Amino acid sequence: MKYIELVKVYEELEKTSGRLDKVEILSKFLKKTKDLEDVVHLIQGRVFSRLDERKIGMSSRLVLKVISKVIGSKVSEVEKKWRKVGDLGKVVEELKKKQSVLFSKDLTVGKVVENLRKLSELEGKGSIDRKIGLVVELLNNAKKGEGKFIVRTVLEDLRIGVAEGVLRDSIGKAFDVEVEEVERAYNVLVDYGKVSEVAKEGKINKVKVKIGRPIKVMLAVLVKNVKEAFEAVGKPALFEEKIDGFRVQVHKGKEVKLFTRRMEDVSKQFPDVVEVVEKNVKGECILDCEIVGIEGKKHLPFQKISQRIKRKYDIEEMSKKFPVELNVFDIMFYEKSLIDEKLKDRRKIMKKLVKEIKGKIVLVKGLESKNVKESVKFFEKSIKNGLEGLMIKNLNSKYKAGRYVNGWVKLKEVLEPLDLVVVGAEYGKGKRSGWLSSFDLACKDGDKFLEIGKVGTGIKEKTEGVTFGELTKKLKKLIVEDKGRNVKVKPELVLEVNYEEIQKSVNYRSGYGLRFPRVIRIRRDKSVDEINTLSDVENIYRKQKGGK
Ligand code: AMP
Image (cartoon, rainbow, N blue to C red; front, side, top):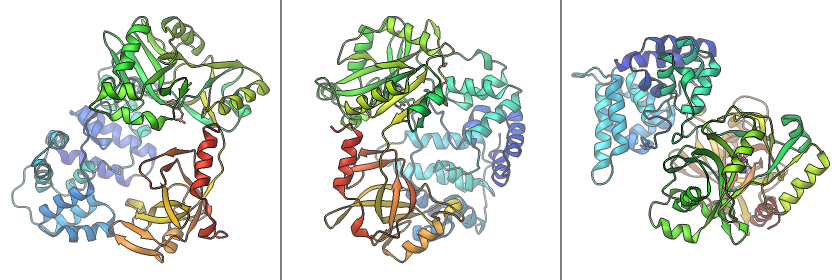
């Protein structure tokens, strides 16, 4: 199929705002397209399936170079334009308009996918030039409209406003299957490309959970207190310890495979866990677990073992230095798929299959309760013991892969907001171009300001509350250093910020980072001398770990 046909659909989708209209456009296109799997990936702005670990991995900097080569102008010129327009896709389109194309071949979907996939394979000496060459080739052949979307695809930022829901509904409509079916298939296959293929073949009902292929994990919404938890999941509920490690899906078939929540295969990084599972889990099954670092009897915070996840060498040594315990809390397959069974029945099977060995593999502890007082006590005790909170589960709930539903909720300690000062910012893209849209926050340590995170949420585009326009206006007056899209500002503007958690972080000079930060308001009443200090941050961090 010619790439231009897809580009026409991108353009239509880009200028259509109504959800139903988008579904109409996309479903018609999916129905007739031949390269269905590739097209579905491209519509999502990717060239690989979600289960594929390869990445295009090209930075905006490199794309700037590509464009300057194609246009034959200086990188600084392209960059200037980029600052103004905020979208390298549009930049290439505008600059190319001025060129006359002499010889060009028609681009096909196949060719675009082929070149972009190659980008992920090139490594080592001379690879940068070859990468540039692959994209230059595409852009040189690009006709009106194509360049914009090639660049955006390379940057993995397509901006056609097709959220997962629109794609899901479009597949349903195109191949005449219920949306719930599409969603169920997706949560098992984790790839809309494959889902669309099975839908087209009329085999969507035949999609099954299979050992060796990760499924989406079940997720939980945050509640404020035990009462809310009961309202969400009903009575009695299972109050389970929330372990601060990282999620793994253990697939025990002929061999044992471990997948992270984002479907990355980490079996090689955890040979110790693989061995423990081989020896202590009966039968072929899929288990939902949390891996946590352990020292003696004590669990360690996630940061202690996070380095093991990406480690490629000295793995044996790492597993001795940072031992871990596998905490099992659910089962999704044993002899058959169990995702449509009730939690209480799944747990019975899980208990039969797992042989517990303290420090190596254990079942997560919990309390079944219908009583608010008793549950609050359990929560408080858990926090005191250093847990980050509880997971509260409906005992009759099915395993809802990939969904935030009220089958599971999570309860954590409420943390006080922080007053932090803005020390830098980044210009936005797309709708937010022209505004500063991401803000570097810092706390105080003596007379130093130490970064603790970036925030871009909680700020409005239009009126009401804190707006990007207002922050940009205030900060522009404070700029002390201008580095392309990033600026440093004099520490003056104080923001009150909420967050879900404080984590240790090597990315920020304070040594801490905020998880899900959100601006509440500008603290006009506070000067920069009165903002929170590093020691406040340390105190909250310790408190959230139960005083340890
Ligand atoms: P959060 O990361 O704060 O959104 O909390 C959800 C995460 O807690 C899950 O994705 C798991 O990785 C983790 N977790 C820890 N203990 C449990 C448990 N008992 N049941 C389910 N998830 C758990």
